[in-house]
Image 1 (cartoon, rainbow, N blue to C red):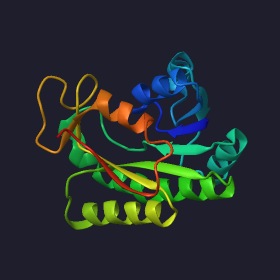
Image 2 (spheres, rainbow, N blue to C red):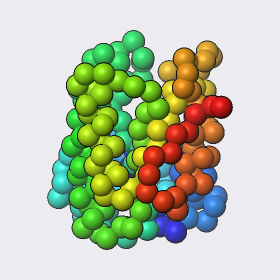
Image 3 (tube, rainbow, N blue to C red):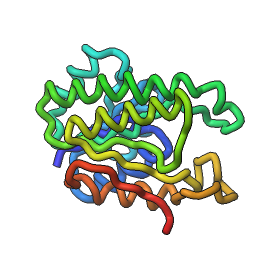
Length: 193
């Protein structure tokens, strides 16, 4: 299967890509950072450098790869969780506009499957509205919403402590995602029992 992973250089993407490659899939890894190209190559992905806010380039990148499935792990979050407040509007924009652009590129390329990262906890106000809008777009397009618990483990905000529930090991989240490539449209919650 040809799998296009958007956000491939993120905390879950760097775990997901090698799992997909090991399972025999051909993987394209989308990043907006040219300095992450070599990392994606080493993980076994075809690196694709593109900003999801550039609709024309994104459409070309998705179309050129000819994916059977797109997995969106797009976020715009800081490396330091104390800076989360500063990134809220950027991450909401990624959920809304970034997802809208990726869905449009998937439709233009006639990609039959689409999975997208969401959250398994409730947000209120404008942030909650962004999550609801994002999930509605994915479901209306026949995609799968992956509601992850708060990630913990190496490379996450919670490397040495457990976050509040719902939570999930980032490694377990990647493994579960790799198993859902052919899931039917709907919402899947990925969190510790």
